[in-house]
Length: 310
Image (cartoon, rainbow, N blue to C red; front, side, top):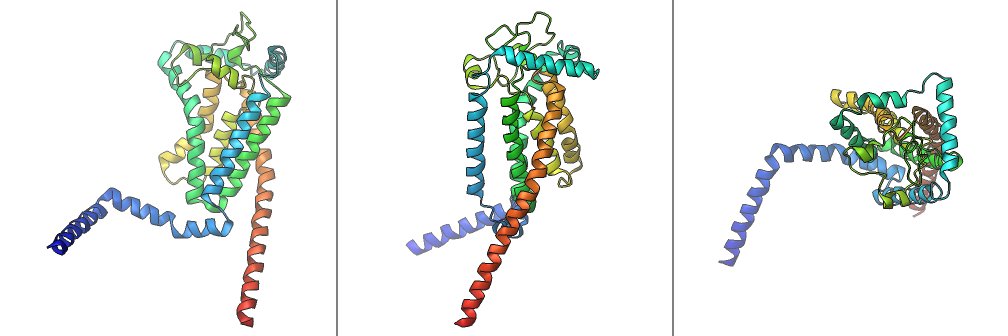
């Protein structure tokens, strides 16, 4: 009797699994897993890419980045120096005839919902799109993953150099009368994170205390957006996906300007950091991969020698 019950339950379980396997969603997931499976896993293994090592590397780097960024920024630099650097940037843009940030922001300040959307864009997509790009490259394009991961890390590290050498008061703080602002009556900028809906605000006392208020030059927001574009260009098949990819950097530039978090020239500095990082990371990763290949070949020859001798 007991054996009969177990078999009946086993048949029901088998039938349930078969029905689940035939569902379109399940079939699609299985096909996608197979597409990402053997060939890409073999490439990751050949290149020495391990998921746990990547999580540890990126996690430790980002922890150190935030620690350095927030400790040696507005916590150690007064608003006078940051304002002086802001005046240098503004005068440079005026000399080029391209100081338009205040005017452009003014066009949209009456559109509350519109500004709130860009507050969310600024606060959310910076991390989510970058994270998606890293995961997508790891899963689908492991042969280029190391190059773009290293480029992103080096670019972010170069950003720290910029924050330390050129602490810059962002436009949103020019008219702010708080401890980090210049309190200029005719600044012409509005801190949209304070006056409009969004995910968070720099106005929080705790957030101000732990975040570098003068980490504006270069714009890591735009550098990461341009990094996503370069890393995924030619690797997105969907037509809508390609449209979104090509729009992402200019939309990010619009977001950082309309929210008064950056001057446009900060984005130019972000591009410079990214291109410098790419020029440095590409030969470094190539050298590392060739070194690993030679080491594996030596090990293989040693194994063949032992086998032949035996």
